[in-house]
Each structure stands twice: as C-alpha cells, then as structure tokens.
Image 1 (tube, rainbow, N blue to C red):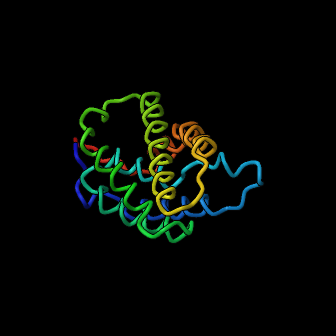
Image 2 (image 1 turned 90 degrees about the vertical axis):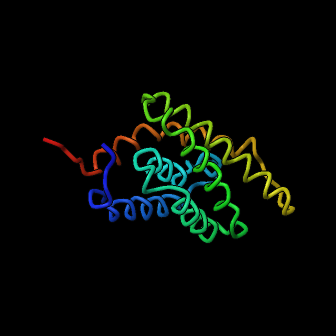
Length: 163
C-alpha cells in the first residue's frame, strides 16, 4: 500500500535530516576526515526509497542546498548532484523496491561513489583540487552504515495496517 500524506510523519523526516546535519558537521580527527559517511545523502536515499511519491526531486534540491550552505561548497553543487541521482533512483524505483538489504547496500555504495565523482568533476571545473580516490573511502563507509541506518529509520517510521 502506498502511504497517503496523512500517514507520513514529516516531523520524523525533519528530525532525521537534523541528525544528519549534526553528524555531517561534527568534528572528526584528521585521519578520519576521508572516511566520513555521506550521512545526508544516505538519509535522503532512505526517504526516496521508502516514500518515492512524497520525497523526491524537490526534497533532494532542498537537502542539497542545505548541504552546500553547511559544507561551504559552491551553491547548487550538491543540490544539482542530489537532484540528478534522486531522479535516476525514482526512474528505477519499481525495480529496486524489491531489493534485499544487501543489494540496497551495494546500490548505495555505487550511488555514493557517483556522488563523489560528480562532486569532484564540479569542483575541478571551479578550479579546486579534489582527491576522488581518498573521498571514495566515504562511499565505502556510507555503504557500511546503510543497513543500520535503514533499520533504525524503518523502525521509527509509523506503519499503516489495513484490516
């Protein structure tokens, strides 16, 4: 069953993104900077996977602009990347909706890597030095945290039962 707008807990969505912002900006030791998971991207993908009709390209744009403001990247960089990847996920949603958690984890790793490559390309066009090889470690850690993130957010999400 597709949840209606009255069944969706927008407060939970907002809280999950606030926690994602906190986890994104929390200071890490120098050695751990390259392995920071892409928290906001993973949370966005969770909501796009579970609520594709309600959480789509518009939410991806808002989250991307927020990430641009928080991380200091050129305004619109992550917004455009999030919109492109979200659009692609929405196009193949009927196919990936039946993926197991392991298959989703592999897909998250692939999309996280695409996110890093697109960020590197855009930053390269702007004239900044990028380390795509080092940043790709964050795609691995994003894939590692995905099963736990999915299970936690899935348990918090209200269920709709039809009798």
